[in-house]
Length: 95
Image (cartoon, rainbow, N blue to C red; front, side, top):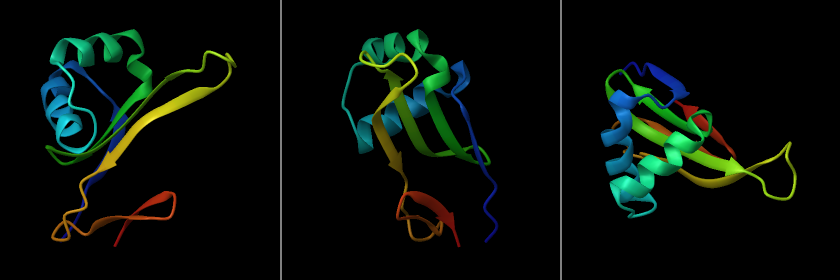
């Protein structure tokens, strides 16, 4: 099995997929709350795509204490063993 993993900032065509993925694995929030957060800091919401399938999300916000820091708020990866994507330490490893 070949995995074509691409990590990128979120774009509008992936908002619904990312929201559903986030609600399943992390926060169950309304789409309006999700949209407000993503659009306020679009460069701080990353998605991992395996071809057309969303397999991970990572998002944060600017730190209120340090303007040069970012606060990580959520990270989730689909760990389906059939996909051979798994978390190893602090790194995402593709077998």
